[in-house]
Image (cartoon, rainbow over all chains, first blue to last red; front, side, top):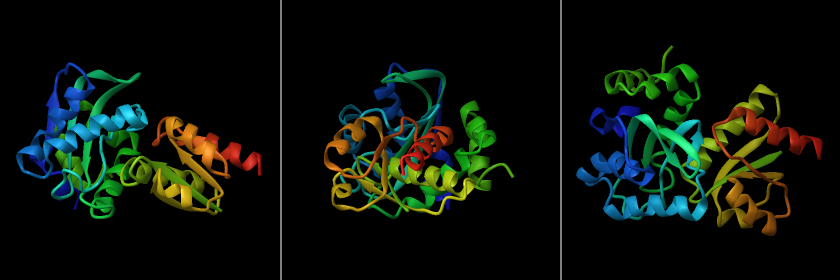
Length: 146
Length: 91
């Protein structure tokens, strides 16, 4: 289920990025390329941070960029970017960007709930922080370290 | 009791915050119903307490009658637990 929304080719790793806006743009590339989202959605995700504050930083080093469902979104999906060097997001250092594209208010909830449960366990989150996309994909397939 | 988890659009962060609140309440044996929603819909909803970002909390405190708690990190169980403790102490 999770890998249907977040398949292997949606996982990326970079050493460093210029700023958090660039991180959101790079993280979104696979979704943009496949037509899951349009450029407008990326602009809206960035705008949302300036309007509503950095609440997309959900935990240490982890951000969940997203914007209004259905606007510039053709279907629900997710994409993940991990960084070696943390980048500042309005005062918060971030190393993991999980872009969430929501087509409506419900079709992504199962996948989001699965990955949240997974990330709430520190040992799973450590695998994601390490940034090895093969290991991250294995983790997503299994639904966490058991 | 009923808690609301609020973010800008009610589809992403608020869903995660709802899960953190539920996890804390389960661990503490607090009987509660948690619903997530967006910052416009919340104004027409009834709840015992609202949890949201510090930025949105400033706005909602002006319009809502129930207590509003600002949570910086939605997945931080300690921070959410502190807010719930504060709510329970003031009951």
